[in-house]
Each structure stands twice: as structure tokens, then as C-alpha cells.
Length: 196
Image (tube, rainbow, N blue to C red):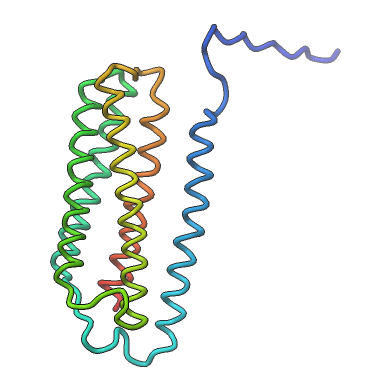
């Protein structure tokens, strides 16, 4: 006798089943960004391999400032995850606090990066090293700026009460993006400041 398959209960009105398409969209976007940054890293290592002395003389970086900026960005990943955990529990106040701190840390990182650019002593037109450095960190900075803007929008929506324990896809999506931005920076910091 063949076993009968039991029918799953129908979802309640407005209840979603399966993976949220907004999250899938964010994951596909992140996949394309991984390929973009992989191209930048590949270019960097290819050019670096062709030079006996790397970086060329006269290109000093501020390792201390970069380390502080790294700590700030990594800390922002923890505050972002706190915001996500809070809204999953239905704690809107916790989500707002976590997101606010994350936005502030993102702005501090951007200000620190601009300060670093202003004090480096070389620019994007200072040979291949300058071009690579400013292209890689500049594109990352643009992604941080995009993340800060997206988090600010999500934060304002949260303040207006648009998220709950059941409906918080935008919070999840922006957190995935922010964690990606943080991981890319760790790769940049390791490559440009530590491996020199």
C-alpha cells in the first residue's frame, strides 16, 4: 500500500513561505560585489608580483590609523548584529539603538578614511601603487557610504514602527550587506597595510 503524502497546512493570510526574495536579491547583489572586489584584489596581486620592491619607495601608510578604523568597522558588525537580534525578538528599541550606533560608527570610519587620504602624501595619480590604493579603498569607501545611507533609511523606518519580529526583511538585508563591507575591509587592511 502506497503511503499518502500529508498536505502541509496553508499559510495564514499574509504569511510568507520559503526564502524571502528580497534576501535572495541581496545575496545575488553581494555575489556580484564579491566578483568585483576579487577583480581588484587580483589586479593588485598581479601588479605586486611584477615589482621587486613593493610598495615603491615614498609610499608610507598610517598603520595605526588603519588599525583603529578596522576596530571601528569590526565593532560596527557587532552592533549591527545586535540590532538584527533585537528585532528578531520584537525589541524595536534595541534595534533602533543598535542601528544608530552602527550608523555612527560607519560615519566615523568614513571621516577617518577621508583624514587618512588627506594626510598620506600621495594621490591616485602617484604611479601604479597610488592608483591601486585609492581605487581599492575608494570603492570600499563608496560601499561604506552606501551602507550608511541604507542603514539610515532602515533606521528611520524602524523609528516609524515599520518592523516587528515577523516583518524585518530590510533589517536582515542591510545587515548582510554591512557584514560584507566589513569583511572586504579586513581583506583590504590585511593586503594593503599588513602584507606590504
